[in-house]
Structure formats: structure tokens, C-alpha cells
Image 1 (cartoon, rainbow, N blue to C red):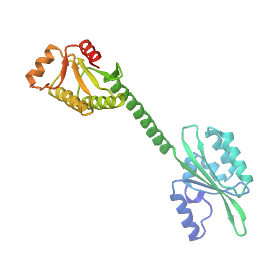
Image 2 (tube, rainbow, N blue to C red; image 1 turned 45 degrees about the vertical axis):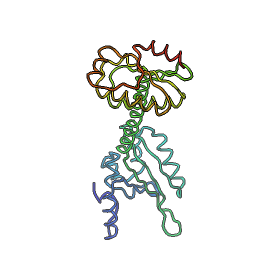
Image 3 (cartoon, rainbow, N blue to C red; image 1 turned 180 degrees about the vertical axis):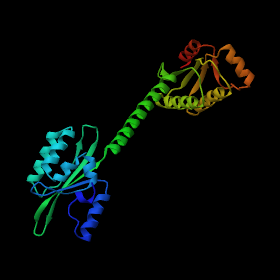
Image 4 (cartoon, helix red, strand yellow; image 1 turned 180 degrees about the horizontal axis):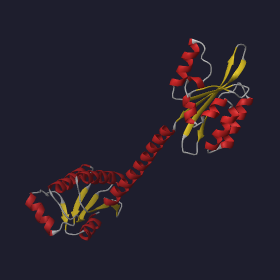
Amino acid sequence: MTNGAVGNTDTPFQTLYANLIEAILDGVLVVTPQGEMHFFNQRFVEMWNIPAEVATSRSDQAALGYVINQLADPEGFLAKVEYLHSQPTEYSRDEVLLKDGRTLDRYSAPISYGEGQGYGRVWFFRDVTERYRAEEALRSNMVREEVLEAQRATLRELSSPLIPISDKVVIMPLIGTIDSQRAQQIMETLLEGVARHQSGLVILDITGVAVVDTQVAQGLIQATQAVKLLGAQVILTGIQPQIAQTLVHLGVDLRGIQTRSSLQAGIADALIHH
């Protein structure tokens, strides 16, 4: 259905106007006060799946009778149409949800000429379904990322907890594998905890660390040095025989770092001297 469906095009201006309306992406409908579909474009017909015979009849009531079967809320739709027809000077914009899942942005405005003489009302319908789906997907991704970040933060906290055992002593038990990212997280947690608790001593227990390589050793040394800058001491506990051999083989310099064989020994020493 082409220009023949949109009304008379007797003049070049009318022809140009009709062609412009046909070119836009919105569905456009002009209804007279007498309930006649005076003007509509092909996009409007396709958007509402209106049969050719209904469009040809130009009856607004006939078109409405066909349209309401596609609506999720036909009563609300008809109520708005009837209200606007009774209020010829009012503007309106809302959204219409269809049963097939589409969402249409609906805008209506009065048409007048001369001394405020009412000619009818124009309706614009724009399919915003894909935009809404994209926005919803974006919101879902943002929520999912926030949840994942919260989970990561919880796991980081659980994997490197800082446990106060007195006013001046805290313990950080380390378990599992330590990579560069976790080493940085350990450093941050350690420094924040020492400053928050105003600790004088930190027991860094590596009983649960199965593998200590150069990277892990350097991370422990850097953490110890950083804690000392805050005025606190560090006791390194839980060095297993195989880890001790590894540290010696790597040539790691642990001078200046207090060590104890077990966490229990470190706690006992801390409670005696602090």
C-alpha cells in the first residue's frame, strides 16, 4: 500500500508531503473528528498488521477493532483513545505493550487550522522494542557485574582475612596459591588492617601455602617492609621444611624478619611481648 493509502495528492506540495511521511520510520495516522482515517503511511499499516480492506475502509473504528486484539491492555488503550478524542486540544505520550512482546512509543497531538478550528488528531507510533531490550540487557549486565564484583571482593576477603587477637596483634593466615594479583591484594589488606587496628604486630602465617616461588617470596618481603613503614613488626610463621629449602635455594634474604615454626609459636611469642 503506497501513496494511494495516504489521502489525496493532487498538488506537488501534497505529493511531497505524502512522500516525506512515507519515508519516516514512525507509523503515522491522522484521524478526523468524524472518525475517518484521513491520512496514514505504509509504516503504520505494517506496524499494526492492518489488512488492506480495513485500511481501505478508512474507518477508525474498524481499525481499532482489529488493533485491540493485538494489545496486552486493550481496555487501557481504548480508554486513552476515547479520552483524547473528547479532549481535542490535549497532547499525549505513553507506551503501548503488544501481545507479541513489542513496545510502541505512542504520541498524539491535535491538528488545528485557522482560528483554532480543529481538524482532527495525529498519532505517531514508534517501535522501541529493540532499544528497550538493549537497555534491559545493559542493566542486566551491570547488575551481573556488580554481583560478580561483590563475590570477588568477598572471596578476596575470605582468602586473605585479617584477624585481631588483641588490641595490638593481628593474624593474616594465607591459604592456597598466591599470584601477583593476590599478592597485591594481600599487601593492601595488610596495610589497611594495620592502620585501622593500629596494630603493633602482624603474624603472617603461610602454613596453608603449598608453593613458594620467587614471586611469592618477594611479595612477602615487600609486605613485611611496607608494614614496618607503618611502625609495626611482622612475624612470619608456618614455614614448612620444603619451603625453607626453596627459600634458601632461591637465595631469599629473610634477615630482619622474625620467623617461627608454627602459628601457635608465633601467637605465644606475640602475647608474651605485646
